[in-house]
Amino acid sequence: MSFCTLTRQFAAAAALLLATGAAQQALAQAPGSGGPAPTDPTAVPIDGGASLLLAGSVAYGLRKLRQRRK
Image 1 (spheres, rainbow, N blue to C red):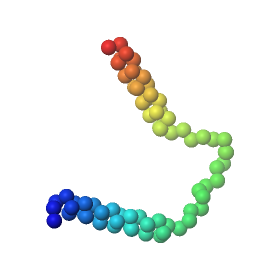
Image 2 (image 1 turned 30 degrees about the vertical axis):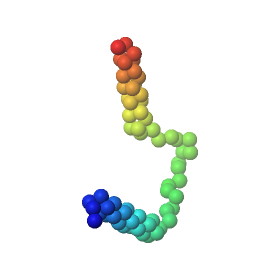
Image 3 (image 1 turned 120 degrees about the horizontal axis):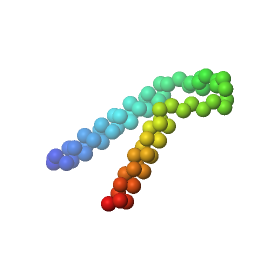
Image 4 (image 1 turned 135 degrees about the vertical axis):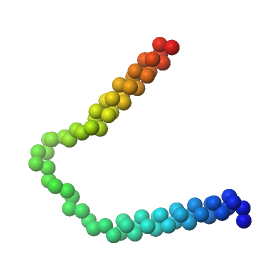
């Protein structure tokens, strides 16, 4: 048996074990309550993700401007 064949068999066995474990956990979970009811339906939570998105877009824009100057 070559090393490549042995590696493929090991990878297939690991994938099968992971898939079986994930299926068992999915069956073990009870249905959720749906979460808490919102007190103000128009309130939108804005957290650090929006600031990271803004900072990333500014950095991307600066990079493009510097590339255009070269």
